[in-house]
Length: 137
Picture (tube, rainbow, N blue to C red):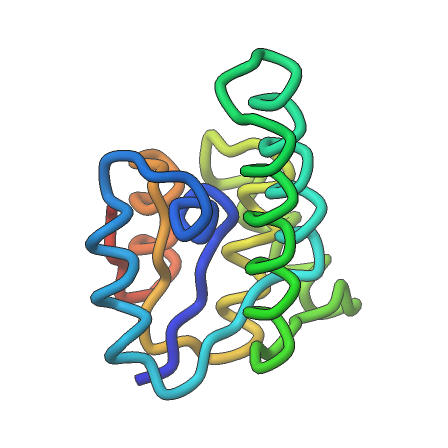
């Protein structure tokens, strides 16, 4: 199974919250895992926000970042190509999405994901309408 994770879902691997267990299950059944090129910066940004808010300690941040960087060694990273940009424009014109959410969906479409995994209900609805099988975590 080829699974594409958006940042909201993949971040649950590094911070224990609702849906973290489900993400681990999905990862166990995934033969190929893909992420958008914007995923890692988005997750690092979220981890740093938690660190500033003091809901994540400095050692927890370092551990989470180390695990993230280890995980992406085996992941397919989908870059922002002209095809991805074209798809994201169509998604933005047809759905109420944030730009980054549209880019994640466009990357999944371009890669040919079997599953699109997200923690964002509005994003998964748009992904489903665009033809992706979605998993909301």
